[in-house]
Image (tube, rainbow, N blue to C red; front, side, top):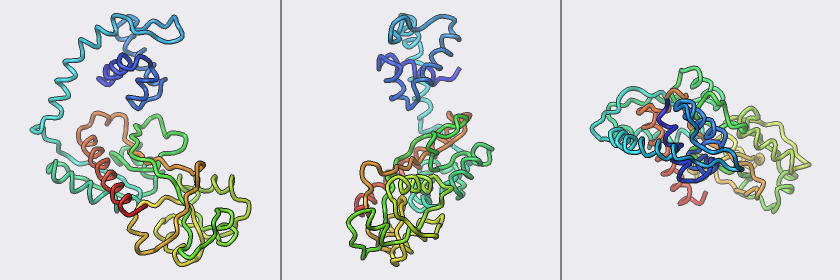
Amino acid sequence: MKLDIFLTLDAVLRGGTLAAAATERSLTPSAVSMQMKHLEAYLGQPLFDRSGLQVRPMRLAHDVSAAMHDALQQLESLRRMPTAAIEGTVRLGVIESMQPMVLPTTMRLLRERFPGLELRPTRGRSGTLTASVKAGDLDAALVAQPENGGSARLSWHPMFRRELVLVAPPSATESSITALFRQYEWIRYDRESVTGSLASRFVAAHVREKRGQLEFDSASAIIAMVSAGLGISILQIADPGLLHTYPVRIVRLGRSAPVLQLSLVTRKADDDSRPVMAVRDAVLSALSTAQHHRTVAGV
């Protein structure tokens, strides 16, 4: 019986519905319902009245929550005690485009907070890194989460969402996406990647006239070529520093703009791993710092 189930029960009682608890716990309503059924099976008694349109907590649900509340609070306090050393090695995969903005701050924070924790970073593509986590070759990876939500055998921790944009040569004066595609060749981002797939679907739905044979799996290479006037592209700009070296014109794609979900993927067995949680918190802090820099840079 995982302790998370009791946290979900508390969320149900606070929110009043399974849907509200799902939002608070970053779960699906079906996952919340399944957890509650597991708890009922463990207790051998129903916790909710399901005779109406919505489930209603019974007295036993409140009794269970009250019985576990103090124990969970004490456990959380013990878990966060500064004297509790977090040591070991965490193997972290990061997609190449995110490494400059994530790894320096992540490694600095971990060395300051947990000197006994060693981070071993590696790079790769989202699909390859995710497969390595599933196989146990990596402990965690920052990747583009598949559009279908990703494998249910893994835990997906949303880090941030990034809207894809169109990049055009700095001298481009065309005012519409259609006119830009008519004037310039389309430099594709790798269609086997999540970013490339999102971009291809957007272009197929909104652009009739398009041409171009070039395709790369490197955002920096594409931006350099666009800056040189060789075409246009649709991608996500991870490193705003590139724009100083290779200036481009950025065009927003409107309400239908594709959005990339970047998530930290881990194995479900590591959900309670203190070293993995320490790395997850450091990555989140690094991304927050990077977003601040992006805002300052006007990206």
